[in-house]
Length: 304
Image (cartoon, rainbow, N blue to C red; front, top):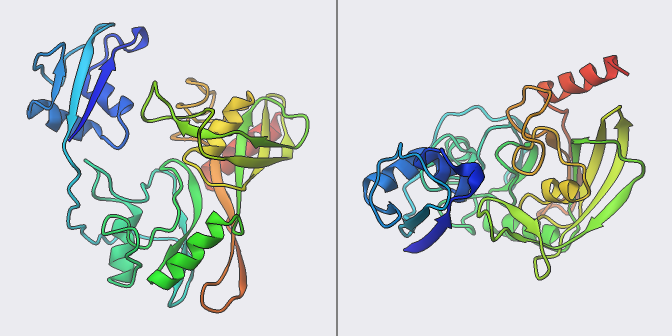
C-alpha cells in the first residue's frame, strides 16, 4: 500500500476531487480515482467525501493506493499500423492518444492489448505480464515509431542498444518561439516533487541528453528535429520547455491555451534505427507525421 498526501494549491481550488486526483497522481485515471474515493481510500481533511466534492485551497488529501494487481490482460482486435515485422520483432507506428501499456484503472485499449491479439504468445516476457514485448515507450499523446520484441533474446539485445546509446531515435517537434540555432540540452531529469505526474530538471536526476536541429522557422514557432541520446520519461518535452521552447499542444509543460485545437503535443517519433538482434543488419525506419501535425504546419506556411 502506498500512501500519498497532497495539499491543494490555489489554482486547484474549486476542482472536483476525482479530477484532481487523476491530474495529480501518476497512472490513476478519473474512474479509478472515483472507485478509490467510494472505497474510502481517499480522505479530505481526514474525512470521507464524495467524488464530486469541490476542493478548497489548503485542503489535505490523503490517498491510499492499493498494491498493484497484475490483471489478466485481454487481447483486443485494435488495428495496428505495422511498419515492419519478422520472427524476432515488429516496428509499430503508434497513434496519438494510445497508451503503450496498461496501468491502474486503464487496462484496455492499449498498444499491449492490440499486440496480444496480433502476436498471441509471441512476445518477450522480460517486462512481465503487464508489458510483454515493450522495449521502450512513448507518451500517450506522442505519436510514432516503437520497436516491439517477440522473444527475450531480441528484447535484451535491443534494450542494450538503447542503454548504450547505439539506437537512433529522431523526433519531429513543433515548439513555441523562434529558435536561432541548433543545440544540445544536457540536463538531468527526475520526477517532480511537486507533481507526481510530471518530470523536472534536477540535480541528482538521471542523465538526459537531447540534440535539436532547426528544420523550419515560422514567426512564433519552430519545427525541430530532436535526437535522443538518452530516453528519460518526457525527456524532449521537459528539455525543450526548459529552454523556453515548449512543444505546441503540451499542456503539462507548455502553454495552457494554444491557438490550435489539439488533443496533445505535436511530437512525433519519426525515425527509428537499430541493429537487428538476430541478423546483425542495420535497420532504419521512417514514418510520415500525422495528418493533424501536417495541417498545422501547412497553416503556418500559408501565413509566412
